[in-house]
Length: 351
Image (cartoon, rainbow, N blue to C red; front, side):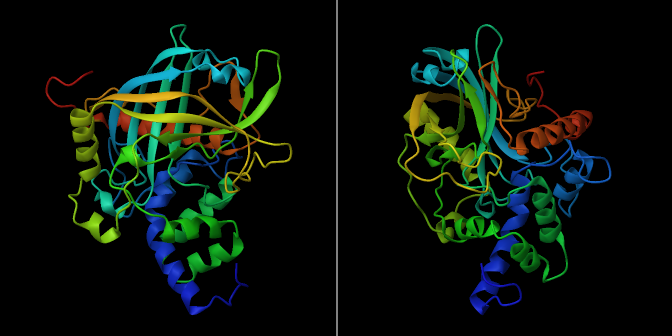
């Protein structure tokens, strides 16, 4: 990072780009601090900060507002049992349901204008256990604390032209995200994205030993990189159309679930810090997406992909973000449930 007040002209140009991206990025994450004391950060204050100038997306999620449902299976290969006693990692096939989504608070956003893409996923077992997770295509989170995330939201919405510059100077970890936002390539398919947990969790094996982990879903589809100019030629909803056509024409789409195991001393409370390359990884299974369904009447519509809903053998770490996200997801659900008339199901749609 450059010294405060001494950003070169090129740095100022980058900050302009970052400011433009922050609106979409902010809506991509409800990483908030509902567990903090009243008067500081609350779900209500964070949802207010996430709300775009055009107003709340009534009937929709307050973040990740644009998305599409899918159903399929998770095929566990059994390798995960050395790390966790969770039944979902024992060899077998388990129902899976999820949602591809964009990092925007606008359910009508043009796909090519949104930098962050995500996947919510729920895997269940016959005995009623559930593993819920919400992942995105970023390699690291933009900031290190929920407080900093709130400040990022305020800076992105500020009319002060110096607000983003001041925020970046005060939060040097933001530089890694800024570099990704400026240089990372684009694809034109949800099927070609890798999705990362970013947050750290604890796996407990059958012997009672704990393992700090993060996970990623790596696509089987070969990513085809395209330019922003090419993206701009696509329709406003091209991602939904493409994934529906891909699954219909080419069949099920798959991702490999890879668990990365921390070494002692690796940071577990800070999702803005990547773990060093070379950490042990374990491929624990394959997500198979069989069917794409519109969100309005689809099975994911009323699901919260709350990252604290975990089966025995998996628990949260000292990372504060999952609990913070959970509080806002609950508030967001309450709001959109009360606004169902503003996002009605189609005639004959599923209850």
